[in-house]
Length: 185
Length: 191
Image: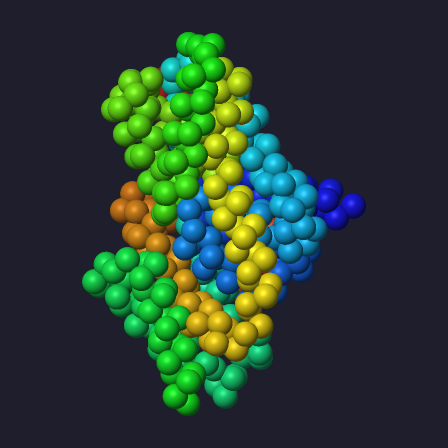
């Protein structure tokens, strides 16, 4: 039963994440955190960190991580299979149409409309991670705010946007920074 | 268009995608660049223009771009068997690496030092994602299309404030895209 749920969840993630990169993230969050509560928000954020620092697509990384935690190695295999299955069908179909008609304009028009929506969904997922940093699941109140976390976020954001630092380096610096602050305080 | 490949080609295909997948950080667009370098420039299995079209297809299809690209390149090089070989080669490295990490994660996440590092990195990853969002959002704003801007704002409000199911939002945007494409097509015919 759990295998079926894993398969079905990751099938939906594979089917509806269009646009690559971070497009799968809001879907993974919806399925894994909100719908099934397989991970809490903090574990989900750790998963994104791990996915960011290892090779491979976020969806496949997440399928393996969630699958193993919920149902061991078979769970990982089934979840991964679920998330690539839609691709096998849809990509084959589109490739067939492409070789037949050599025309991609309708497809690209659909993609152009999807892109703003996907950007908005990624923005929302990113903000929910920031809220996790700021409040750690507590109620919205000034005394609950994690100021160290927010300061690290602000510093990281400036390093990325203004100085174009490498994202993995910035993430590692945040981790080391928080450890040092934690040890001193 | 799709060749039946011999065993040697399949083996070469497998190890090429395995290598690319294991050492490519930074998502689908990066992996397509590496695939082009390998399959177009070094092995000459696919020509330049076709690779560009395959890249467009991989990006427009649902699912991970790396997996989609592997499906297309595999199919092109070795038919159905090539597709299976390329997909397995692509997902094997993340599958193995994440399996190992998952076991470590369960053991380490409770350690207070590791927890501090991870907590700090959460700030970092929030910054990384919102930086990417700024780049992507600027791209959408640059199109100066009022429809697309409206879609972006509406989708954000729907998901962030009203908790609308992500899948419905994607479906709605996709349907809108089809309608716009049809309208444009009609306009083109009328002109």
